[in-house]
Length: 265
Image (cartoon, rainbow, N blue to C red):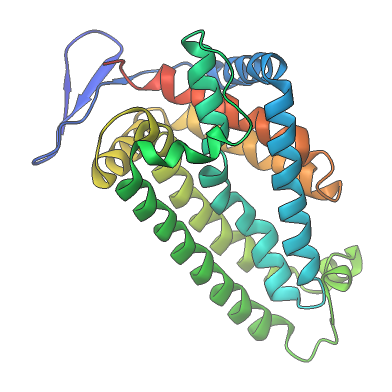
């Protein structure tokens, strides 16, 4: 249930949960978050680009290690969106310090940001690992059903335009299952992880708050999710080179999305 107090602020109610207020945002807010994220990245460029490069190399290594196994390479490529919120905690930490005009942390301090709420953050990470493993199995089933005996030996063969034309039913099924799973993960994580780092709340409260924030601001959040998907796709299409800049940019921007959507305590 949702109650209204101040105009533009919604106060969701759930049994035994103390949920924060959620601001109603306009459709142009995601572009504002990108601008603020770029400003944070410019102010903290040594840390931002260092971690951006590390995570880009991690993504490149994982995808290329499975390049000759189409279902696994595709699962890891698209699954990068599923695990990205956990990796982005380092950028939430940096943006939080910039917001309060603190000095930038030392190089490895952002990696320890999980200590602010270890139990809940650990549960969230386990949830994402489960989702990624489930997506890998779904991907394997789809490849087996639609591409069994097709002669496609690797991701290079599958990404050819001729293969996409030849197997449109596979493309549609893959996009349908992947899109539904991505939408679920996005709605549950868009504000929950920065919230877990910033406030002493439990895992369930953060998930419900994130889901309610997405539901109440669905048009703007749909645009935000689409922007993230397009930018990540650009990063992957450049062999993860552009990801070194795109990842920290989106990480910092996601912090501002949380701060503008969730009522400040």
